[in-house]
Image (cartoon, rainbow, N blue to C red; front, top):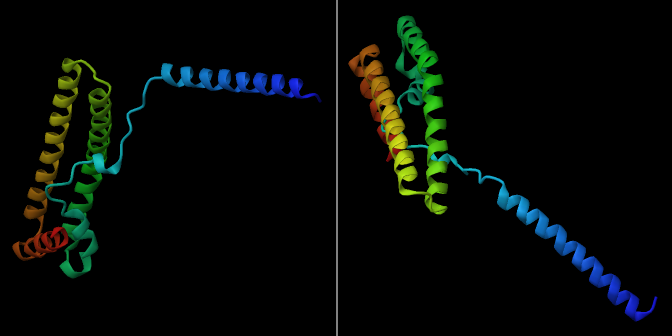
Length: 154
């Protein structure tokens, strides 16, 4: 091949590659941005006693009635709690994008209010869980679970 032919083909290849990259870029720009979330977007529980109960079940000496009541509570509360934490993650991701993308203030306020409401529901669920554990365990058992929890967060 002669040098001028190589130059022309190289130019054509570059032009085709540039066109392809531009097309991909336009397609990405046209696609709606996905709200990225992470585990860090979940709220840190105010109090989370069930993992301590499960971890130290043998040391607590739970009665059959206590074990059954705690199992039932977990089965009923867990799906709602998981749904709330997923909603919190989604709202935080949406709010993050709204802030970064310069969404109208009304939209950001709406997302912020939804997030606050969902966080409040989650906090109230955790509080009800502690109340339930307190009413199900003996004072001595509850004191042990409380201390294990506090030791774990310090």
